Amino acid sequence: MSSKACDVTGVVGIACARHGCFAPNGLVDLFRGEQQKNVDWAFLKALEATSIDHDQGVLFIYDLMCQYFIYFLLRIGHLLPENLKIDRGIGSFHVHGHKDECLFCFGTSFIPYSGVTVGEILESLWANMNAITPAARTASLAHRAELLDDHASDSNHKKSLGLRKSSLFFHCHRLIVLPLHQLWLWPTGISNRRKWLRPQRNTT
Amino acid sequence: MLSGRWVYRRFYVADGNFKADHIRQRSVDEIWLLDGAGMMPNGQNYREFLKTATERRTVRCSLHLHT
Image (cartoon, rainbow over all chains, first blue to last red; front, side, top):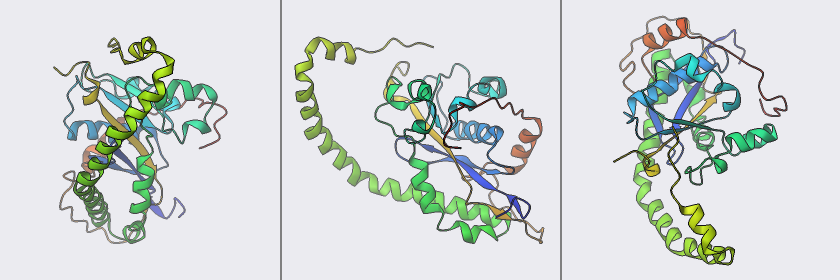
């Protein structure tokens, strides 16, 4: 659709990168393309609504992080919770489309204690949401908000129902595959493994 | 004892969806049942923030194949 006919050109969503749950208050309208301030507000509201503790720390993954983060603190630093350590990353799918430096600066594989995080979970959530966006397109704004809200809540609800099955799977995975990994790492020496497993000093 | 415990770290991911657009409608009778109570934040606070928000774009990494 042309931007002339549209009063809202899209949405920006915030989700948990581990479970893929939509963060409440993290779905904001876009008015003229994907601007930084829209993402700023979505992030701020999602932090607020998920009641984060400043000791927890945040890893924030965004496709354009290399450009977005430069003036991030200048834009909304005064609105963020105090002493909150924010790490920045780019999803593993997008980061390979960037410069080579971006991979090493922002690739989630290179961020300490970020686990095995892809950071592209929203793409698959959008794929499900796109089934209802044609209906939301011509609805009234209030009804559209409720449609999207309903869909996102339903997605979260289904996810929490499926959590039992998938956590069983991952538990078995942990029991079977991880020991095999450790066996595979054995030739590289115990000294190296100790060095990797040593807790990293918390740098704020 | 939360500090330094990486298991408690929150992982947030942000992304845009341009298919969830909305065509301008003629009727203006909007009745907001849950403005800011669900997935979408409060509209008025959002618009107030957008008025004062700054936008500083820099050159993005130049070999950016993906937009």
